[in-house]
Image 1 (cartoon, rainbow, N blue to C red):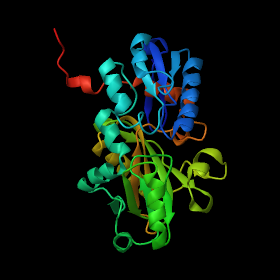
Image 2 (image 1 turned 30 degrees about the vertical axis):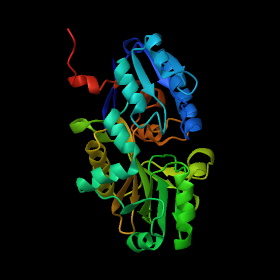
Image 3 (image 1 turned 120 degrees about the horizontal axis):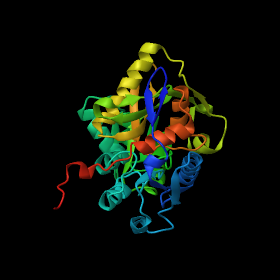
Image 4 (image 1 turned 30 degrees about the horizontal axis):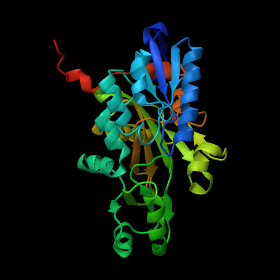
Length: 331
C-alpha cells in the first residue's frame, strides 16, 4: 500500500499484486456503448500501466457467464446505461461472487431511474425539480400548467442526455415525449432550472462518503448535450468551481446526502443546477460515471492531486460484494 496525502483526503493506494486478476467490463448493449468503450479502454490501459493483471470484457460480445471461467478476483465496471449501470450486471457479479466497483444492485437500479430517484430524494426533503411521469395520452396543458415553460422532457432510464429535449412551447411537448419514448417507455417532464450547471463526484459509503471538488460546467448556449459532453471541445469546465466557499460547501453536502439516501457506494457523480438565487437543485445521480478523456470525475480528482491511474487503482481497491455481506454461508 502507498499513501497520497493532500489537503482534502488520504487516498490509500493498493499494490498491483494485491488486486489479483482483474476484469474491466466495458461496451455492452446500451445506447451509451460508444462512451463506455472509451471509458473502459482508458481504465484498462491505466491498470496495465500500473502493472495490474487486467483484461477487457465486452458483455455485448461475450456472454457474462464466461466471467466464471476467467478466475477473476475483482471487476471494474466501466459500463454506462442499461445492463451496466442499472443493477443487472451487479446482480450477475453477486451470483458469481466477483467483487465489483460502485454501487450494489438496489442503489444502481434506483439511481438509474430518474423518477424513483426523485421519490427517494423528495421523501428525504432534498431539493429536486418538480416533475410529472408522462404516459401516452397525457394532458399537455395540465403538464404545462404544473411545471411551467420551458421544461425538460427525458427518458427515465437513459443517461448522456440521450432522448432529452428542452421544450419551449406547449405544442412541442408531444414530439419531445415521442423522442424520449423511443429510448424508454418511462418518460418524465421536469421543471427547467435556469442557471449554472455543476457536477459533484462522491466517493466512499455511508458516514465515510465525501464529495470531491465540484466542477462548474459552461456549455455553448447553455446546451450541455451529447455533442458538447463527448465530442466537441467548446464546453468549459471550472475546477475549482470559482463559487463562494459557503455555496460550494452547501453543494458538496447536498451531493453527499443525495448519494447516501440512494444507498450508493464506491463512487458516483451528482448533477446539480443552480437557480437564479443560487439555490442548488439535484437532477440525477450517476453510479457508473464516465472515465474518458472528457470525463469529469478524473478532472475533479486531479484538483485534489490524484492522477488518473491512481484514481482507477483506488476505485478498484474499493470493489466489494454487497449482497453477500449479510448472506448465510453454507457449511
